[in-house]
Amino acid sequence: MKNFISNIGYFFKEARTIFKVDFLSNIFSIFSIALIFFILSLILSGWWISKEVVDVLKKEAEINVYFDENLEDDKVNNLIENIKKIKGVREASLVDKEESYRRMEEILDKEAKILELFDENPFQPFIEVKIDINEVDHILQDIKSLPDIDYIRDNKNIIDRLQKLITVLTIVGLLVITATGVSTLVVISHIIRQGIYSNRDQINTLKLLGAPDSFIGFPFMLEGLFLTLVGGILAFGLIYLMFSLGYKQIGTALIFIPLPDFGTLVKTLSIFILILSCGLGIVGSLFGLSSAKNS
Amino acid sequence: MIEAKGVHLVYEDGTEALKNVNLNIDKGEIVYVTGPSGSGKTSLLKLFMGIEYPTKGELSVLGLPIKRGEEDNIRKMRRLIGPVFQEFKLIKGRTALENVMLGLRFLDIPHRKIKEESIIALEKVGLGHKRDSLVEHLSYGETQRVAIARAVARKPAIILADEPTGNLDVDNALKIMHLLTSFRDEDTTVIITTHAIHLLKECVEGEHIRINNGIIEAESRGEA
Image (cartoon, chains in turn yellow, green):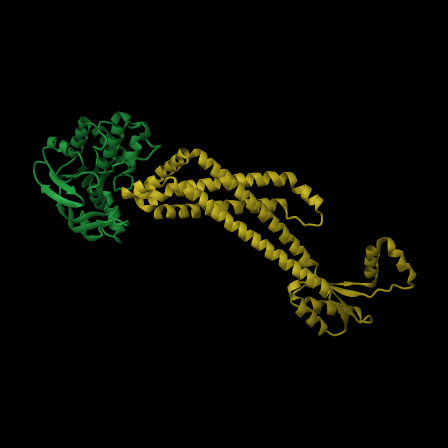
């Protein structure tokens, strides 16, 4: 350990020398790593945006509960409170006759004059219940068991489709993220491994002189870390540049897609790339060293 | 110091490199291992360095067993020896001094002493003035002397030199032989392999081991 600490300066100097000796190849490695991280960050951002869409879709899941029209106000309020207590219910609020009428006017837009044909407001008040989509079945059951309920418009058909869409989006997102993550690990490990492999003579010489594995491997690990870290920083720079130029435009063009906050996205991506590049630098170097050891 | 009992070495491809080698080399000896190309000299040195393991028999170097499964002991043993490889195995892109220092960095030598000892070793081999030259810019003979400096700077118990006279003319070969043997003292053994038997006439002391076809044919003490 004492030896290791006293050699810290040497390790950094040696890592710099190893980098300089194979300069061009290392520069290409940095660019390749930067591009891989860039692609991974893009995919991650896409996955994040699709997750936001899924979350919004999930929030859209709602059912309408109709009750006895003659029910007194405090009983209606009690009913709402009881519905709110059901597990999976996010929000429950009363939509009175006037609000129902207004909403229909909004939906019908130019055709709304058809509503004028009615002498009286034809709509019924109802309780609008926003729910957790995964809990729909037992929520319906629990609401049905409450008193004074006339009927429930469960939008089952729409909710089922919504649920399928969410499942597909989640699975596809996870698959893409996993596939890209694994490919990134493999490719980066391979790049670092190649670098170490080209220095195998040096590694073998040090072994023949009796150097411990930690002494032999540390400069290579530092070099691997440097390659991935610089690659990561470059990738982040590219992502930042791209997003700061185009994020608002995307948001305006795809108004129906709720984009995550720019600051949060950039901060999270920078932390992600930094941790990933450090991790992959170390793991890739260890893979490379072990393959040089076995050769 | 080095003890071999009935050592055989058969390579994976079936080549029988050494047959029934029995040896006992003591502290402070000079040993020349001679024989024609392919006789088994380098194989013997590979065993002493722990690069190969005996297929049969028992071998110990500096009291440490050389066999499969003893990697930690072999690493320990390697730190106590000073190898001079046939192809030198210096590290390119580093200066002569850096190469010599590299052989000392992981030994129990105080950090401040590493540079000092390395410079002394380079001066001993006559390369003090070239310590800051990159090894790839040195001549063949100079490169060889850097390899010797790296070995001796470690103050090893055994110096193992594999064909150090390989591509040298007689004068330079003799200089290298004398240089290597000059590091022999009561604590340091020097083992040199060479196919140039004629050079040994000029070397006044040492033990001579003649090897042919993997078999030790003759051992002689005193004059080589």
